[in-house]
Image (tube, rainbow, N blue to C red; front, side, top):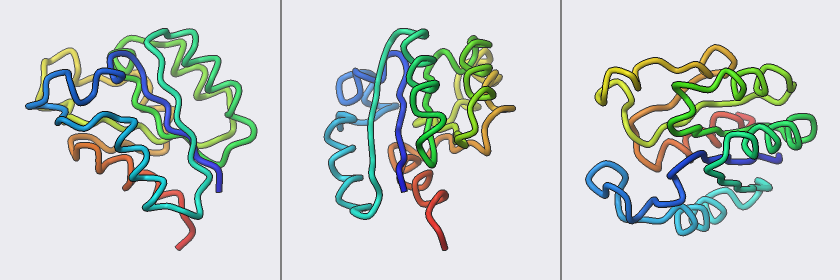
Length: 139
């Protein structure tokens, strides 16, 4: 099982940015714990603040990986191009958000990418990524 986590803009600041929302753990630290939790999964991680790089990564892995966990950050609410990239590859994508987007500003309540994803996990903190990986594992 080959799964990639793709994080979008500002998620490189996890552990420093708005700790009351996002906590104090960096994603790199959390990713190491995920690899320990799922030793039989070939886990990969990519983060970029640049929309085109996120699209390029979806294209690069979307024909060879078993699953994508995507936290598109602010692009969730604005990027038709990322939505189209998800639609253009056969690898299933699960949308993940650390915070509950429905408890935040009104503009965050609409996800442009959701219609191309198999589902969404929102508001469960970093644990949402582990739940997302578990979703794709055979029962």
